[in-house]
Length: 176
Image (cartoon, rainbow, N blue to C red; front, side, top):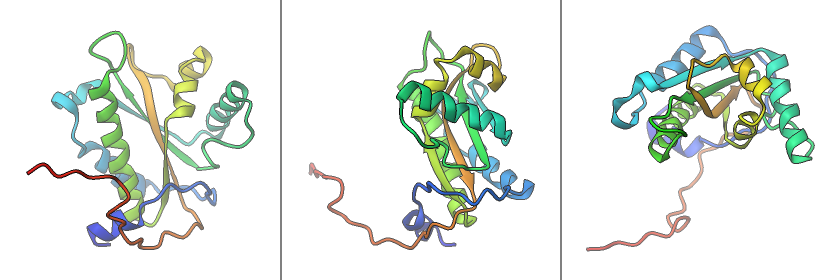
């Protein structure tokens, strides 16, 4: 798939077939994560956790439902989640660290699209998981690392058509 076609097809998928992601496909997605730009090249302060354990995925969903009072699965039944964590330079993650996590997430999501898979960035459920010490312990993060976000990935039946770009979608000002 040509690069701009990938961008035009990329969307947040919220329905998954449950089909497992192959090891070869996962390796390509993780390669995309490794190719991501990271603020101040602090790659040693980034960590990925690949989760396919259904009980842990279900626990994240249950935690989110308890804390929000809303029904539904915040991970949308995806068979795979890649958790992105950072070791903050200070007491808590800062903008540049969240931005680095977002770059990693986006590279993985674009790669999933290019491979014909759906994906969705997960922020709220991870922020809520960080409030649950038992759940954080199940992530098995290295010392001082904090989960920032995740990407769920999997086969989907949702269409991913090439969308026309609306150049008025985001207000743009030119200063010349």
